[in-house]
Amino acid sequence: MNKKIVAKITIVSTIVGLMIAVQYNTMQQPTARDTRDIWEIRQELSEEKKRHSELLSEISALNKIVEEYEQNDAESQAQLLKNTVDSLAQQTGITSVSGPGVILNIVPASELIEFGYRIEPISPDLLIRLVNEIYHYNGLFVEIGGQRIVHTSAIRDINGATTVNGVPIDKSNLEIRVITNSYEDAEKLYSYLYASSFRDEFYLDNLNLVINEAQSNLTIDEYDGDLTNTYLVENSKGD
Image (cartoon, rainbow, N blue to C red):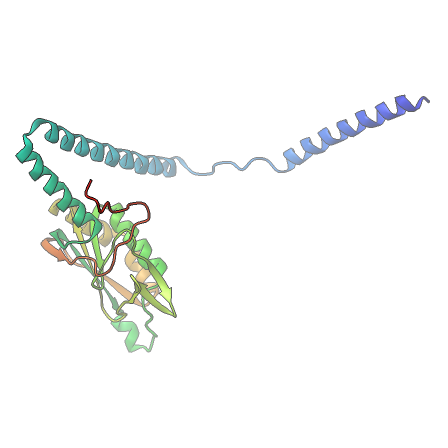
């Protein structure tokens, strides 16, 4: 047989073999299917719609501020600017803030102490999860054990101790203060936390999560530390 014909047959056979191998591998390892049921998908869709609604509300509020700047005179604009600066100062944590909210207490489970169980401080992971849920359910400002939570705050384990902003927290009675936008939001946050499974998760760590009823006025102190930024530079010339 001609060598060229043999070479062609060999190349064709190799290609066909590779195609069969790829097809076999695809049949043996099918693409993973989405196994979520309809209710899980609806719940995720509901969360996304809530985020979308929150973004639209923020855009509407910013547009309203712009309209006020455009429609008012210079004196009113100066007051609006001051109000905006004060609001930003509260959001960044450089000033104290007061408003309706909820106080949470994390305390050792007394019945477990009586039976000799060892009480460890709350783990950073569990504390971070709790803070995330608080923010998710309309918590605006949070203070943990006297430490104001800001955009640079860190909750981590340092040498076996749970710390907030680098400060070890009290493992015998940790107070968490949460301020919300309105008393209605404070009541909703209380109801959610009271009905959630978070208390069970704390009890697994021999701790009790005490959720106090909503209050009309709470105060959270300013952040006790230096706030740093990476991208903003102060213009000393005043231009």
